[in-house]
Length: 240
Image 1: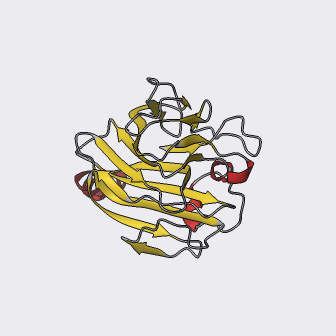
Image 2: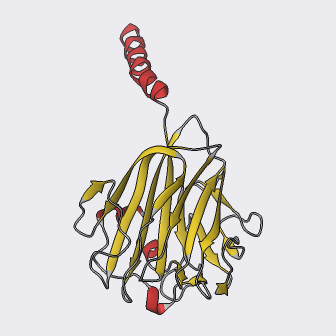
Image 3: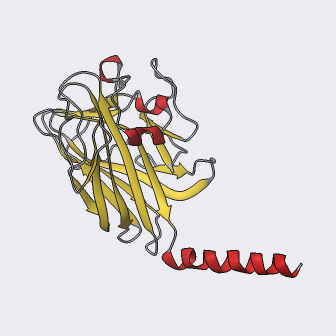
């Protein structure tokens, strides 16, 4: 599952063939309300996007977002020319996404914090989340502050030099004024079919998320059966 946050008709880069999510317009919202102007991404209710897998087939998963805190007028919108990431200092994990998916993004400004909810997941599986935020100007992009729904998992933060440190999450671009941050959690178990994470603002007053990937991890029991299956195939080939 891959998500491109940004306008399909962005002047600096097109949307991707996988889920493309943007806002129909820049909008001010009050704290505790849903971001109910999603567009793209396969439809859904006004404040929910139904997600397709990378082949375009409906997955049964959905994405929603809610403001958890707000300043005087939290702005949501698709980053314009001033918020695009076109630099060459993206962390290595950003290569998981097409280059145009790291250009335009969904931004939140004015001390707002936003929680993203991924629903419809299987409680019997674990999931890996990978995200990318970045800015080419202003005072930096921000990584998530916490995993709010879901259990277990190993958090990571990846800087431009490609270093990953478990459990290290930052709230400011390490370069201060330009660059990107890859973030995520590996091996997260959903709670009642849901995983959620919050991206919060600090003095930078800015969140600019470019892309997100959610991957289901096979059950250990299924993996254990693979050697048995391979051995059976080899034995059958010998008899033939």
